[in-house]
Length: 339
Image (cartoon, rainbow, N blue to C red; front, side, top):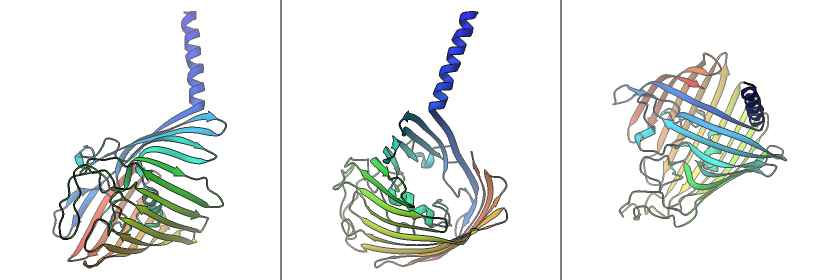
């Protein structure tokens, strides 16, 4: 009996020590709603990505920490992995070190440009049809054009990620991917583009850099990225809070795809938007245009509203009109929960 008590006490002491030195957090989101797009039936949709994540920190002493993050993406309406084709840890799979030098991680995650740009988009980068991030904010650009079918195109795999410490509001972020094949499908040569072989190795090392600045009322970003097919994108963005409740934002992007495409090689895009907190809710609004070289211009106007039921749960409603070859209107209603 005494031995059992001693063992139990020792186990408790070790557990307390481990608890003090390291921590693991389970987190996630679940989002589901109903959406209707012109010419289509009403569907169960989502405004945000559904995710289940695990992240942890271990204190190594002298200001140094080991960190990791794993993030599964799934579909709330079916319970399946996102798109049924993506990797288990589609959202993020990174491990690294953090200290006075900043943060260094290895694995898979959003590029420096993709991660920085969401702060200047009215829907905060959520992939809803009413939002702008997946098309206009990125000027129809793909960070990972040589990834496997169904994979998310706004991340680098096999990459090194660096975030500098913040100096007087300024921060530098960089991502460099290895020249490794990632299972892309073959692309045949056409009058519009050159050929790409199956499971191609990048001809250059993809990289992404961004510089950000933040203070109480003003924020700004400048970014440049080159992908595995040597498409290049540069972007500038800024936001301003004239009052605490109101955030105004604008961005401009330019994509040069002349290394892969033969025609329509340049795409330019811009966006203006606002978030306004009123009572227990938030109003989201934006207007943007995308102008591909030699292709019909895209124009999009969107309006959304969030109503907070608690700190973790809110209801939302979105309406958006998009004009290109044809005009289509989207209406969406749903509920979002963070855990």
